Length: 296
Image 1 (cartoon, rainbow, N blue to C red):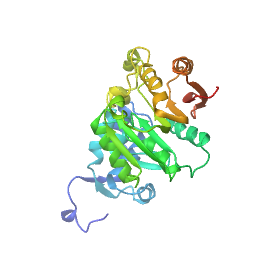
Image 2: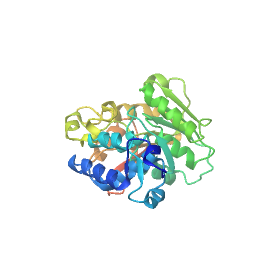
Image 3: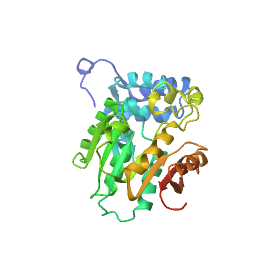
Image 4: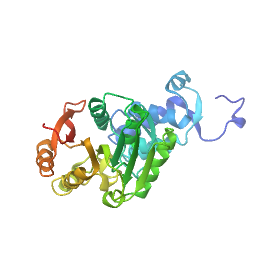
């Protein structure tokens, strides 16, 4: 990216070294963790190059300052990195993301691990239902692992449902993934029973929302976070519905918040369900429960 003369150089270009230094300083001043790393990643995305290509640039190389500086300003306001770049990796997928849904998180991949443990036969023609599908990350990751499976994703937010549908096409799985914008009860009145019902529901107690990190509190959709007074409203609804949705040997696979395992066991028991397995995330926190009709 060189030019024969200053007259040929487009305006608003700066050396790589200067952009990275100013970007990192702005992020550091804003209290963003790992400011130098985030500045490098944002510059890489802004230039549309690989990490290796960015490393190969001379520190004196003149490159476009925009959209990098605009993205730095957004990140300094603690907008999630993924909303700025418009994409996020989840499991083996590269997914589009937007403020219509939560940013997919590594903790949620625990649900896919639970699925693989419950159904080791990858050729099984399973049926999946994902309630509160958001970006579609759980449903699409599950379909990736089971090429003969099909699934339905439901989200009350039409923008989120549109995002999930777009991701199904992006991942070449639109033929196996139906996405619906509807309330859970309205959408499922006439559907068949499913082998697996997934959900990463809102589970944060309302009173705890103000204590969330700014990236989450100020930017991610509160409807996808607020679990009611005790954080368990969605689980009460889900456990009531599960007996009407699961096939005879089916399972529910839900994400849970810190310390919610016992409460969910009690809620499940009221609907004749048991927690048959609990999986920890990478931090050793109970993050996923598998519900079914068997003994715990």
